[in-house]
Image 1 (tube, rainbow, N blue to C red):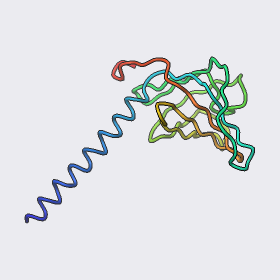
Image 2 (image 1 turned 135 degrees about the vertical axis):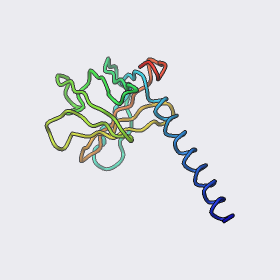
Image 3 (image 1 turned 120 degrees about the vertical axis):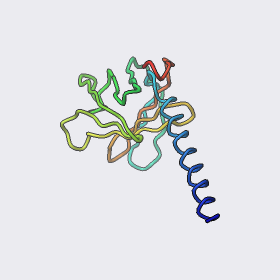
Length: 137
């Protein structure tokens, strides 16, 4: 009986901590981000992020949707604007191309990194430009 109670307490603490971590990450993600660097790897893993001048932005809302003035379908092109939703470090786009329907993302040292599906490797780095109250965005 004591073991069951102890195990229940430990499991409760474990799940409470993981939920707090996920909520903290989502709170950090909510807001508007501006594109500042791109990484286009030549295929050998030697690519590094390079600074660019850009007005491209992506916004993460607390209802699980994104707003953007960039192309999530074809990241190399400027004329296609897409939208979508996000969940568990993945953006689900409205793209018709089956290979570009999802985009992985992560928060790294206060930067947002989008990792696109690519044979060589293509990523975009964003910095937060608009900090908002996560409950109101």
